[in-house]
Length: 284
Image (spheres, rainbow, N blue to C red):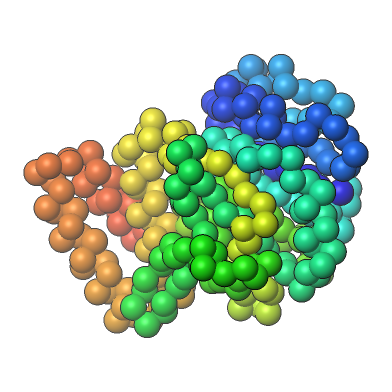
């Protein structure tokens, strides 16, 4: 079975659009799990029905934490399921669920799959992620436009459209709760890639995404959390020299932004401070 997993944070209107893009024809068996990260948002319960389950978090768990709540529930029900994590501000291009099932039957070697992501105007927003440890570069790169392959192996995929093949895992896979928002998808991919799992991206099916329509409401928090997640990822997956060079460049850039974009600059400084104050912990 395919389980769609969506994390809600005051996004009922967006999730309603996402739900309307899912096929009404139930020839393909699927369910939707909504993790409500905004417990006082009662409007989300208007979407509840026999095919949509809402799990209410006691507090805002962040993206990774919210996903963990949903993945854990799904794993207890069906440890062989396909879990399609999808952003509230994304929706399916067309009815492609039959293609998804056939894809994973044909490519059982894949543990974590990203789909191509387009903007509503048809531009490619994501088609693969690369990571260069020697320089600390975490890049998006179009790996799909010039190939007819069913999939291309890559280093990481975006949490916007993130499919986990549970049958490839000996125990329930988890996002690291050290990340609140941003780079938890990168860390998840690198952690499980280092354990031998195959990460790939495909254009056989995809989603449409309105970039940052949710997080742009909260610019300071967005920059703070993304800066923290970026530094935490560099700390884990690069060496000390690369980390320090990237940190110095980030601070210098933030100083320049103080003049033109002070809110962004303060967010970057807050992210650096948050990283420095973190409690050293191992990976989840």
